[in-house]
Length: 103
Image 1 (tube, rainbow, N blue to C red):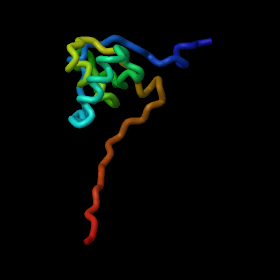
Image 2 (image 1 turned 180 degrees about the horizontal axis):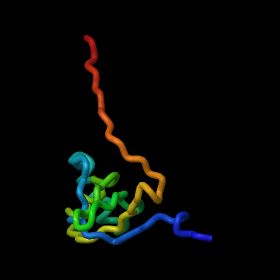
Image 3 (image 1 turned 135 degrees about the vertical axis):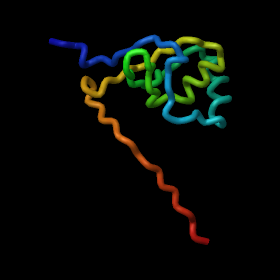
Image 4 (image 1 turned 90 degrees about the vertical axis):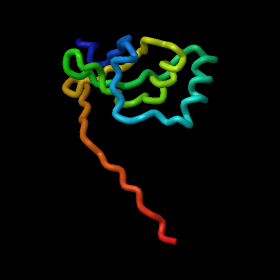
């Protein structure tokens, strides 16, 4: 029985190797820095996609968490690495549409 497919791949990565696809939310950053500083633990590791050799990791989820850890002086982060072919992850682009309210 191959248990490798049943457990997430967790790796300790340099924060500088994470390549965010979006900016962190400045309004959420300070409260998160305070909470992580007080608790001293990260409950949900960022989710990353392993890019080509030497290109780092695409930060799929966790921009606020990784920015908060960097602000606290951490150089490394525990992250969950996903691989589309192994984890049945399908990546595609998306668009946000914001409509104007008619007044």
